[in-house]
Length: 324
Image (cartoon, rainbow, N blue to C red):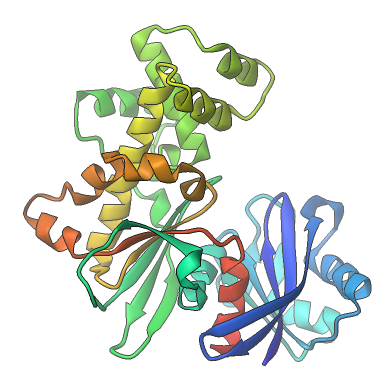
């Protein structure tokens, strides 16, 4: 089966042709376009078809945000998407929209051994439900229900559930963020935005001057999370503490999701941050947070935890959603 697949982002949209055979997906003719250069998704897809000469009458597109009855309002773009209207505009037989984290979850089965990095081996041969927890621009979460023979992916908005502090420092963090946001979700601390929020709290809490790279990013509306991560790699305080706390909180919320879904089949860390922070996730703080579930610790130790390294997984999943 041939499917035109897309990963719709606020900055870039990736498109490719996919050939689907069971769990296996082969991508060809990949291309990326600046999303905001186009008035809608249909015009962007037409440009891709013109540029590549590709021919297809079936589309599947991963979208950041909820998809309800084939419709979605993109989070970071002024686009209102409707699968039926999109298919009609493009002359396709059918078009599908799915949440981007649901697409990642569908893509898990198409990953190869080299597409993942292990954080915790878990119990050998363990099967069951699985989940994806993806820290990037925001915090996305999705589940994979195991029916005894195969997984079925489903979307959630779990990243928007309430942040729960566990000690004096985290209660102070919560109070700091409440003053800024009112209600505080896990996304406010486990995401790129979260790294910046944690750092700014710690700098104020310790009354510490900003390192020059972070000060420049803050003053010039730069990439604060990247500056904090780089300074942490160089051993600069409080950036080191900020990244350590981020890793701990990422582990705790990944463990929360895994516990709720009984993810004995695996916990997959997606998004843009985890592949760049493998050393941090393996350093101990992440697993400390992940395993810290009281009487359930033994259960958590049975769950494999892996980082998704492939950037193509939303495209693979969009293809499997239709043809898998």
